[in-house]
Image (cartoon, rainbow, N blue to C red; front, side):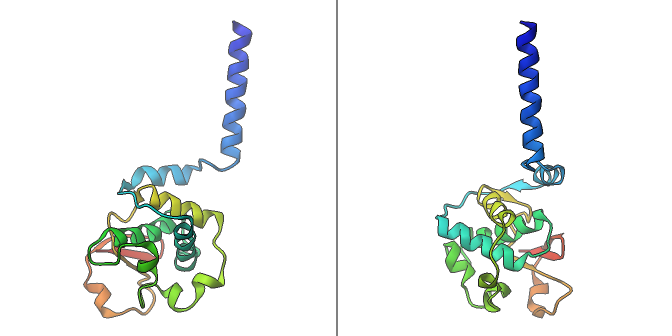
Amino acid sequence: MEGFVKKVRLITALALMLILGAGIFSESRERSVKEATAGYLVAARASDIELLARVVSGEAAGEPYIGQVAVAAVVLNRVKSSKFPDSIPEVIYQPRAFESVSNGQIWARNPSRENYNAARDALNGWDPTYGSLFFWNPYKRVSPWIWTRRIITQIGRHVFAR
């Protein structure tokens, strides 16, 4: 029996080393998940996930992981809102809705694995924006109208609002 327990402990330790070594659970990501709230799920096709990851890549380049999830969450919050179209592509392709679509960045770069993971985390309900419908970089020139929105939080270089 004692030999069996040692083998189980060894296998468990090896499995944990593999999981942690692969980066599946990073301390910062795990902490961020705990700090955020869960939202509603949105059904998505593979093409929707790719499009969402492309927007994350274009809009949240250089942002922390939670900021990438936040950008995806805003798209999904718009899909769920009666004030916006009801599909991921329709929300993303709305005229002047996202700078990366307007300037072509959505197609200029390929999304990373992290961008896809951020899109999937948002689709699975992680919403660190607490229901925000808008985001912008306050250090860039933006329409004065956006400042009339109720600010909810700031993540990285983006402000999130309703």
